[in-house]
Structure formats: C-alpha cells, structure tokens
Amino acid sequence: MCVRRVSPACRPECLYPVKRTAAIGKQGFPTRRITGREGTQSVSWFNNLRLQWKLLAAFSVLLVIMGTQSAFVYYNIRKSQQAAWWTEHTYRVIDLANEALSALVDMESGYRGFLITGRDESLEPYNAGKPRYQARLDQLIKETSDNPAQVRRWQDLQQRSANWQNTVTEPGIKLRRVVTEGKDTLTDIVNFEASGEGKKQFDVMRAVFAEAIATERALLDSRSKEQVAANETLQRVIVFGTLLALLSSIAIAMFLSRTLAFEVAQIGAAARQIAREDLPSFVAAARA
Image (tube, rainbow, N blue to C red; front, side, top):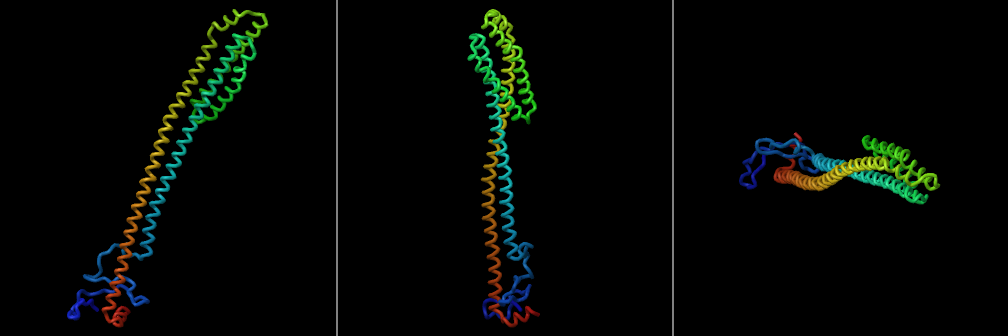
C-alpha cells in the first residue's frame, strides 16, 4: 500500500511508502503511530511511552518538586522555631539573673538599714530576699545546665553569698542587737564595718553577676541573628519554592498539551489515511 497524493490525477504515484507498526484497533483505527518518509522518524524513548505513563511521569515530577519544597520548608520552620526557643530561653535566664541580683541588693539594703536603725522591720528586705535569691539561683542552674561555665558562676555565687552571710551580715545583725540591748556601743558597729570586708565581698558578687549577664547577652545577640537568618531562609524557600512549583506546573501543562495534541494529530492522520484507502484491503494488509 502507499499514501496517495491529494490530487486524483496522481493516483498511480506514491508520496512515500508506509510502514504500519501495529494492528487495527477495535474501532478500525491503528492502535499505534504510522511512520512515513525514510522509515520511522527519530523519536525519543519518552515519546514512545503510552499516554498514561507520560501523564504519570509528568505529575510525578511535579510531586517531587512540591515534596522537596515541603521538606525544605519543614526543616527551616523547625530551625526557626529552635532559634526562637533559644532566644526566649536566653531572655528568661537574663531575667532570672536580674531577679537574683535584685534579691541580693535587697538583702544588702535591709542589712544596712538594720545596722543604722536597729529596728526589726528594717530587716524585712533582708529576710525576704534570702529565699528569693536562693530560689533564683537554683532556677538559673537548671536553666543553664547546657552551659557548664554559667553553671559554675551560679554555684560560685551560692558559695560567695553563703560566706557573705556567715562572715558579714549575720555577725553584723547579731552585733546590732547587742548594741540595741545596751551591751555594746555604736562604735563597735563602726569598727566592724570599717574593715570593708562586707563591701568587698558584695562587689565581687556584683562582678560575677555582671559577667554572667554579659555572657547571656552575647548569646542573645548570636541567637537573635540565627533566628533572623532562619526566618529569612524560610521566606526565600517559600517564595522561590512556590515560584519553581508554579513554573514547573506551567511547563508540565505545556508539555502535556503538546503531547495530547501530537497523539490526537496521529489519530487524525491515521483516520484520514484510512478514509482515503480501501478499508478492506487496508485491514487485510494489516492482518497479514
């Protein structure tokens, strides 16, 4: 068989030989493409796949892109959440350290006030500050358990404050009570304080607090930058990932439309050829 020209006057002539690559389908059309000039045309393996596999491959590519984007988004969300948690944790540690220092200052103020007045109500800040100070240090040790250097600072402050109370505040309070009872004079209190030991120990504790808080503020600055960077990365992943998915969807849609158009054109070409040929002889030749 041969494909004739459109003009009836050219019936004896053939445009090019035809090679049928498959049998006739149930509706009388070839189930595969008919190739022409110089045998089969050069096509890729993908073009030879069935339409259902082409659709599956196209949607699989899109799903892979969307899955990859989702994985990156999830990773960066987790990273951002972790950075936010550490930032909040650092703020909490700084607040606890400031509260502990405030409690220590209250103890020192109450102690000084009692030395001057000798009234028990002046000791209220001192008595209230002691349990609050110890509680905050215990919290600090727990909150910074991942940072051995900070834990050592809080433990050092516990020891220093205990020593300050044993050697300065408790003896001073006891001496002031003796003076109030008239057994000693205010000169004894002045002489007790003149050594400056109490101020010296208190200043050292202040310095340790300042060092610890400065360390936490440095960590806060670093973690805040990490959080900002994580948020910026997350935004880029969402924006560019969405753009990539959109462009991929458009490309896949264009590819599928061309594929479908090609398949329809093949069916149309086969139908037109069958219409121009002697159908019984075409079927007989295809079955031969």
